[in-house]
Image (tube, rainbow, N blue to C red; front, top):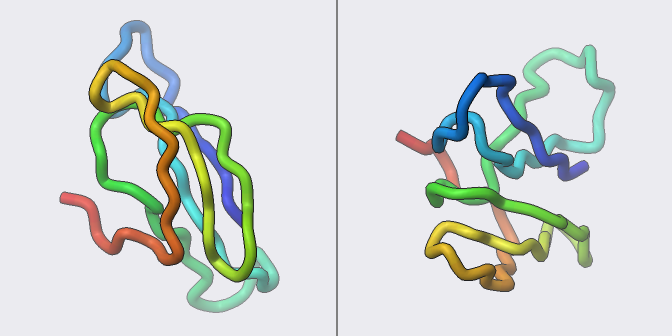
Length: 79
């Protein structure tokens, strides 16, 4: 399952912009179920669509111009 999440904030900052997360298709209360970020880019990650397997396609606004991005696996740990 792929979801976009925002942190509530009173102003726009990188931390409060929409970010994409992917979760395994398991019980949400299952032991060790943890979401993974699909991108570590700054900026918003919008309009996600699932493709086959773990592949996700989305619009990334990091550069100030929307780019279509695809990834077949999570990005790993974001610093």
